Amino acid sequence: MNRETIQQLRQLPVEGVAERLGLRVTRHKSLCPFHDDHHASLTFNVRRNTYRCFACDAHGNTIDLVMRHLHKDFPNACRWLADSTNIIVEEYRPQTPSAVTPLKPFDALRYAGFFERPWLSDEARRFLFEERGIDRRVVRWCRLTSWTDRHGTHWLQTPYYDTEWRLTGMQSRNLDYGKAGSAADVPRFRFPYGSRCSVYNLPVTALLREGEPLYITEGCSDCWAMLSAGHKAVAIPSATLLSEADKRLLRGLAERLGTTFHMFPDRDAPGERLFMQLREVLPGLCHHQLAEGAKDFGEMFAAGRIA
Image (cartoon, rainbow, N blue to C red):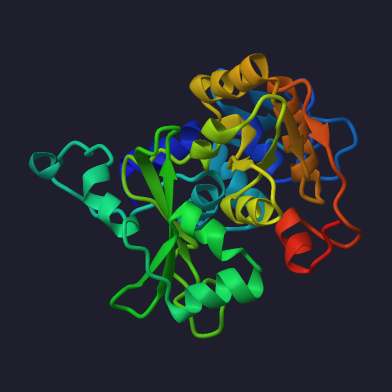
């Protein structure tokens, strides 16, 4: 895993990582998960981006927190952080100083052709249409495509565009992840270097009419489900990853068009915290309740439980 990627992971906001792990952070403190804590002794230093418990002396950075909380080794902790925050993980190969080359920006021209003539494998069709129930028109709109690598792993490729359909990044999703016989060392997601995968489905914002609602989902698959249900929607990986430009774009929709924002938070503590974080960016964000037993909107849609 290269040094640049590791540094990116260490620079993720430590409080945001803690919340993704299920900790409730208030005023830079939370209950320490590493001992029987009742007085919020785990403290976060946002300037240094570290944590420390003054009772049991647990301390470290973002990667250390994931390693200790989830009982993962270093590489798997990095992969968990990458999967949950859209940061690219590559295998590290030691290099001599003379062999080090600067990272290249995302090459949109190299990848744009993948999405001009989309092709779906049987595995991709099964995932999208049978498991998720996604409308074929949505798949065409989102320009989803697929490929199979030389090891036989099946991937679904998702392009990210800006508001004017310029390719800014792409995500490859491992369709074999977690299945029997799949390679344990192949990550769930992959992203080319330089990919900007923040707000997904931005082209839909150009189609918004005055006063029309826009739904915010936690990931691409929930966004496909929301679009299939007939709503205009975008997706974000995490409120802590929204850039100032992203925030201005969303607030601008409310100011210019009177856009109203809606969300079905995932049925867990991180989902509710994400909603509250987004509400700080979009004060009018409306909370919608999932059907009983559904863990997220995609699951509720696939089960046919949409009113």
